Image 1: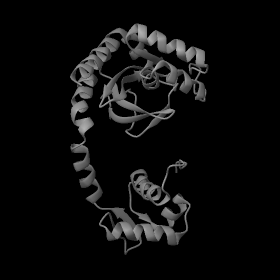
Image 2 (image 1 turned 45 degrees about the horizontal axis):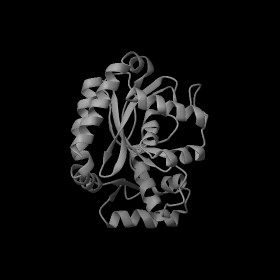
Image 3 (image 1 turned 90 degrees about the vertical axis):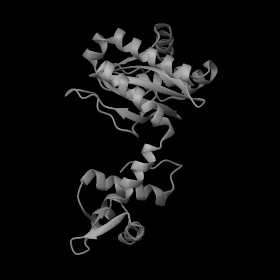
Image 4 (image 1 turned 45 degrees about the vertical axis):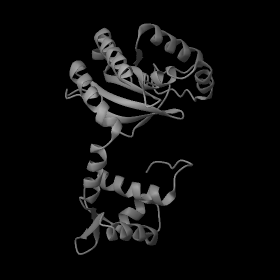
Amino acid sequence: MKNPSETDVKSARRVVQIFQLFAELRQPVPLSLVSKRLELPKSSCLALLKTLEANGYLYRLNDGKDYYPTRRIFNEARIITENDPLLSSMGPLLHGLRVATGETVYLAKREGHLSHYVEVVESDQPLRYAASVGEKRQLHIGAAGQCLLAAMPDDERDALIDELELTKFSAHTITSAAKLKKTLAEGQARGWYLSVGGYQSGVASIGGYVWINGEPYAIVVAGPTERIVDNEQSIGRAVAALCKKVTQQR
């Protein structure tokens, strides 16, 4: 399981971990396995499972030995998603960009030193960049981070860059503050931000930023390095045009 952050509420995190476990295993799960994976006493896990069962989110099967989620969480999540004010306006635009470029498109916002993917529209090509909603990446390793840094006031951005741990993930990861600042300046002059192999050697991304309800978001197209680099101009222009369109509408 993922390491908790300082802002986690333990009981809430454990409920999330239980549902993540069901999503990972895709099968009914016994109390003993939940206890093992969450690294908690069986008594604590049983209390959580019984609470979820009593509220209609889990049911028991196999003579009561195993637990599995009911459709209640799916139904409620669907209602929440369908009424998401951000995705209802941005979703069709992201889908349009995916169609125009043929590559995976995602929307991200900054959370501290990380970029957080809030929506992902995957390419339908067999070889594609695969990402999931909720993923987080360090700001220095991709186009999303570049966009979100570029959207900040100069003094705040420089101060934040000086705080970043510029960890090396690949041979092409930017690992110096000076290089990162230079890359941002190049992106501003170009009209879009480009990362080639910053996180994975075979992946490249192109992005721009927009302001939505007073907050900056990155719109990014990502895919295999060769396709992204070969089509940089057309993808970059498509991203820039969409960012301009969104900005004018806000």
